[in-house]
Length: 562
Image 1 (cartoon, rainbow, N blue to C red):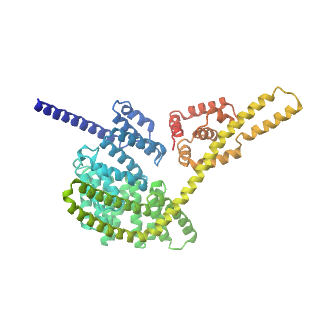
Image 2: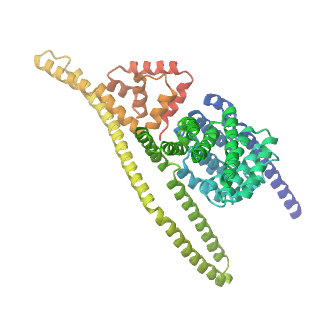
Image 3: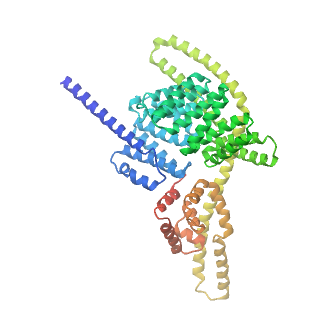
């Protein structure tokens, strides 16, 4: 009986494992299928509806995560809709206690933050995902190759030596010769190039190029040419470097890979400036600058373009130089909060600190296992303290040079926080004031109704006085302009998303939309705007007719609470 029990228990365990593997495989196939999305969120919702309608709650998590990706493609910037669905997918994954889903939803959100250069925000999420990936067998993870590749990219971005290990680990899960393997091989080559190991760097670039040609991946091939140019330039073979970069730019233009064209153009312009070929460098920088100005997440490249343009001017045109320096200052202020050097260095410090804490935790756990290793544990603890002191001295020396920049960053952060508090309090005051005005209007209307039956001169004067008071509470053009300014300060992302994505919306529609964002009902809106409730309802109906299918998306954004 005992033998039979053990046998059937193992059999059931194998069935459950097989079922789990099938689910993971199906989830992976859906994710891969949705990688190349179009800018149509309504179509995406229809396409993913089977996930939302499924009885399996794990598919609901996948629905939110993929819908968040769809909104990211639609808006092409960070947006409240994506944020809401990313965070919801993570929360629901945590409730399910499925570690593979928890890791993947965090990774999915991190990719979004990485793409839009929100390095500071993604760091704690990636660290958590890395820690959790150690608690699960890699074969049970969702798309383990993609997961380790992304970990490698993050470590490469912050110049951490573990990048190569993560990237090589991801290669174990790449299926044969593919574009993905070419991408990883190229990334490993870049890691070695950063370490100034040009031999290994060229070795991996050659391997990446061979795979790209075999799979007809023109995009990857173009990028490899640009990366090889870096090595030839480093070796002093400038002519070969220039030739490779021009090929890279030609391929990028042919296949409309603007991002890669921009990177290659900046590298080529840098080399041409050293060769004093100013005319060609200026032409290339103009094109690169136009591309860099199209996306907010290209700001670091825009900074490079502006700096190179200043070198090109060399003080010969003071007016152009002044304009460029103003642009540079604006870009640097933006980068200070996203992917600037200060943020990247602080992120690197946080990851090193986390690694040190993890090592210390491991030592403490080992000490708790048995008192028989107390002496060994004591030696480990002493060595840890010594290494900590050395590490502390090392980091102190490094951080001493960065102290002034960190203080400047903190001061800027405090200034931004104060501004945010002021704006927040202003818009809250406006919302409260609007609610109070509505109460005052209701009171004045009641008073007017009470004196309507009187015909005396005194009552007529009182009526006129109340009517004037009532009119003063209705929102005038001047009051509306002041309110609108404060609203934009508080809800800038929401306001500009409406303006950009719903050009059909007029100023009269904006009044209704903005007041509804502050939770005012139809009655309150009619009082403040000096119109009837029916007029407010009809305004909404006309807007719905005008927007059609986009109306639901508009009011999803209105109802979303930031």
